Length: 278
Ligand code: NAP
Image (cartoon, rainbow, N blue to C red; front, side, top):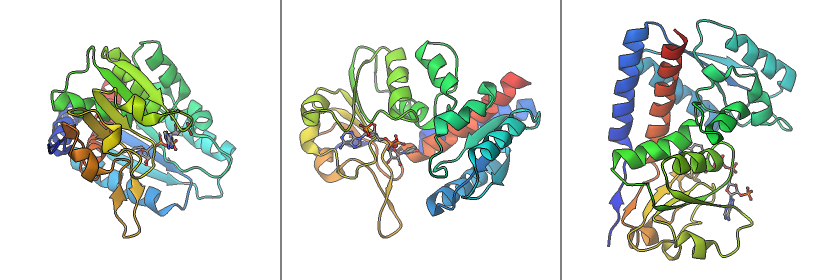
């Protein structure tokens, strides 16, 4: 068997199209990105996000506070952007300076502008079944599955990873679509026994090659969220694509799978925030 590739390009284009429609309707839409690191891949990501916003007519302002920024300064910046009527979406880019936690600082992002679901209030609301922005990556997993018409209701979903930005919110989104969800983590015993039960397996551990063919039930759908840098400047996922493609029914590639959908989801969330605030 060779797994069907769940590419993200078309799903991303659909989301971008929806974002453009909303931007045209609302008029002016603004995204604010706050960054406090000299991490090269974070800087690259922010540059690519700025380019993506330009393509859909969203204006994006980046505030670079530098790697020496303190929590007070970052929190004050987030509050200032929250109070700025020209800003409809706010992203606090990671990594943060040592000792600072995203969930703590993001509490200063106005929930209506929390387009990457980083404020703990957003995760709480999501868990309670109330309207809230989910982190774009978690939402993108669901959008990619829906775009490829993969049924979730009644199916067994296993998520590997329990971070507040991917694993936990994704578990809530899958539950809300009536999947039966298991969340695994680094202390999970016999990981392969659990992952082999999955109809839909999502790998979000940031461990290249963690998921191999022996972790996958024949015919299962596998979504690879992992993005780890390679020595030659590329990206690699958590899934060993060679062995998994022989067993899975469908597999999202890295790169080219979830990444484009995540960026498009952020644009869509920002446009949606602007529409709700206008
Ligand atoms: P994270 O905060 O480091 O969390 C990783 C999770 O994986 C933790 O819950 C950890 O368990 C678990 N884990 C680590 N090793 C494991 C193992 N051997 N077996 C089972 N579980 C294991 O990472 P994250 O921020 O959630 O990101 C996860 C991956 O997604 C990274 O590669 C990141 O780059 C990628 N990502 C991609 C996108 C995208 O748009 N495609 C966006 C965001 C993140 P413990 O909780 O026990 O430590």
